[in-house]
Length: 369
Image 1 (cartoon, rainbow, N blue to C red):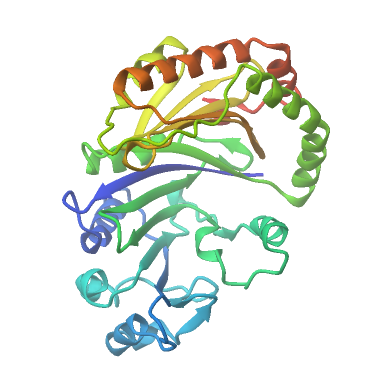
Image 2: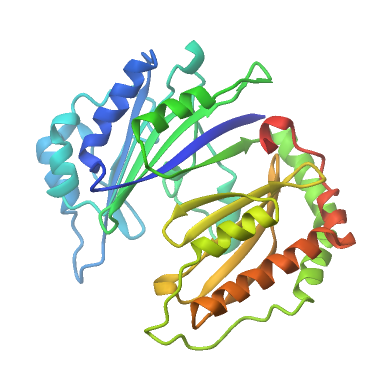
């Protein structure tokens, strides 16, 4: 089993632009005494213009940085990448071109990685999570291209930044392996040191577990046995009368979800984190030794607001209940939220939920803390 704890930041352009983030990474590595890393990149452009068959952004970048390699294509985009290469690079050659990378070349997505960092004086090499392949085959009925999604399915210790040119922020993640020689270590000082360098920037913590083939087979067997209990639990929650709201929202309807969500999180024993404006994550530990996580989202332009609740442990995560609403006013949203959390509180005490929760082995302390 491999477990990696990640702290995720959304850094708005006005706080620190994408082009300056590599400097932040180097400052952090120097301050933490991290001397080793492997630099990876994945730069892509879409093919959304009629009749265009040749790359534009890739060609521009290659004029300045021919060492980026040849342009490749997967489905609807061209890209430059070393994600699937074994070479060990540093970012020294790219740093002089960060401003152009952000503003001139026109890539629709830019991903940079500083992985295989020597936290605790030890390098634990990155891995590519292949479990998504089976899901892709199930959804699309065909084998995926070997490069497709590979750049988003890396497991390792280091820093990852991702910028979409249509968004006003950069996704910034620092990840550290927390299992060393089979024992959990305290990685929070490394994460907190990065938070100190980004004062005022909201963040969210998560733990990703990667199982061995044997562990995955055992977990899949357990999940298959638990599936009827999960379905019974979902049915029990739905029986409380949460039908989809299909009304049309007037364009002038407006409300804030934060104040009532914070209040209800405290009332029902959840920790609360505002991830981005209008998107909140609430979490608590269950009696069965797992995590119960609620995502509250105000939706586009405060339209289709929804609550989604997941039950998770080491090696599994499943939707357990959900509800959506189209409130027409602040008071109506507050009433919807109170109704959902009241139903969730009753649901947690039900036999159906307890059976689903106890169908999986309790997670270790480092997962549910």
